[in-house]
Image (cartoon, rainbow over all chains, first blue to last red; front, side, top):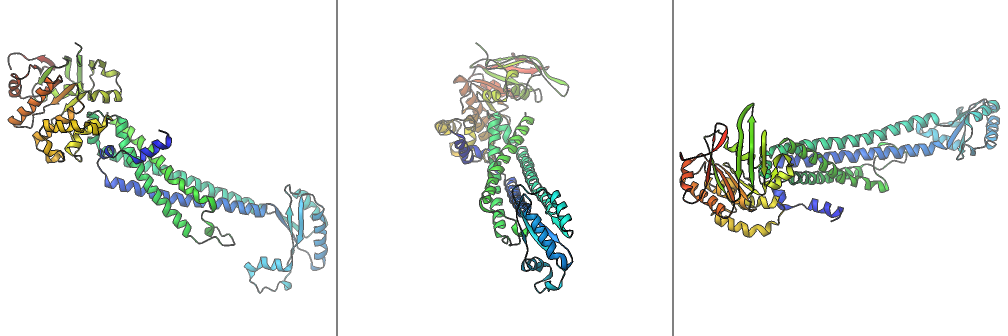
Length: 300
Length: 228
């Protein structure tokens, strides 16, 4: 019998062997509930982790290959300095394109902050030049020196000071999500171990009878291991489904990419939570086996 | 003939005090032994040593030719399938029916239980419990429970049957009935060891079986003589 055959026969179980251990309603419900709650939390931790990763990627992609040159100069010099900056940018290696942003584009940028009826023409707005870099970008320090020399009012912003903390925060959040999943798995293992130990202690008499009639420890352990593994798997499946439904029911991501509305799964990421019940089964199997082996050793 | 169970200079102490010292005991195939002595003299302890529920502190015990100290827990489990044990308190799984309890040894041994169903029916008939096969153990009387325990002890056709005060809670008629079942097993070739403090029961068996009577006295086991 192959691996899947063994797995199938483990979950199908042996009805007679299963009846050896008396039904324990309370621990059964407790184990299933714990597994369900943990699976539910795992779905959210996963969603958080994946959403953070997506956000970090998007921010990096949007900001990584662009820079902005801001030219703040007296109105009389603004056009000349802008032309000088464009000239420098167009002759600098590592720059794909440089484009002076129109008044309409600048208004659109300011609109979220000042509203649509802003009289932009009456304000001393600096000129903005959007720079798109090539795969290997320009020498930023050299470019800054040239810009300062040719256009004193020009300031080059390569978005590094925005990007670094954002990327660091996103990486930390992703790590936190992963760490939460590990903690959840650990807590699940601990709770199932305790529940299994309690069940074994409550069935001490049963174990003594089974040993008296020639049952091997492996046989006794199997009866408990299967019971707890099946309960944990069922609980985790229910918790996973509930978690996925809740994630599905969250409002869809806004165009602006607000973080909270972006919490969820995209595309093939919906498959990842399906791994939770098998992982819960794995954790329950080894936790119960560990508890059973220890308890049976002590009962010698 | 090699003894099935052999104790050589076996000793057991508990809480700093000796319960036995230098006990020699040989249970050969087909023999019938009574083990007697006052309550608290250590009959149960000695029997537990015979089926490896307890290990000797000194001396050696060999079961089916193998030193018990050299056995791991799996070996002990296999050996226990060759020794049927009947306790005074029977020790059933109360959530299973009488029939399921009797079939338990077959089940834990990994045998096809359906093949043992014929055996089960014969055993139930033998211990007169056919009508109670679906009852739960707590629903049985003391005598019925002891008979069910005996049926469970012999479902795997063990070579040795050990009964610890099997008649302790039974009236005289029921005690004799159970004793007769044990004698029948002995006549089938089984080695039987029965612990009892009931001397009348031992005397009553004299006409039916040639039994050796062992007495625990002074922390040692002696062959009982004419004082019985």
